[in-house]
Image: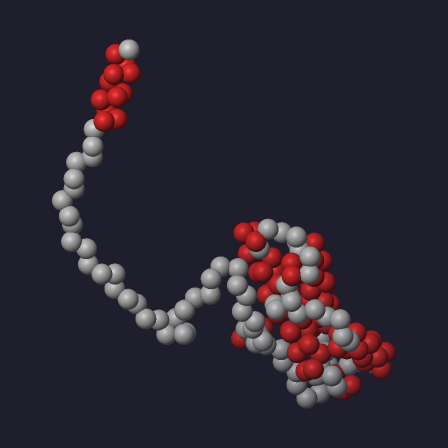
Length: 160
């Protein structure tokens, strides 16, 4: 019983009035458009390669090296793997999309670099043999066919 009476007395207490603290208005900060940051999970479309991703044509009289062709092959494989991973993550919850968006940017950059390589290397004189040139032309045809998805702006979760 003593406990109940104690609780009643505590509950009947009124809070002490606090002295009024003068408040200053919150300063308004005006940002330029370039300073504004996009909210999380928004996607900006980029159409440029980073300076380190630039592709050069072989110099006059040079042939494409095996390492250059290997890099093209690895880029195509990377792009394909990223496409699969992005599509498999199409039902991911919104708060987990950051990693998928990062993969989307990487996949789009890979496709852009592949296309730049193909444009820069599209001369028969860069290849050792006619057979290599024909294989390159087949790769070029497949890359430029429609059906390559640019992920930024075509997010997979918009389709589900």
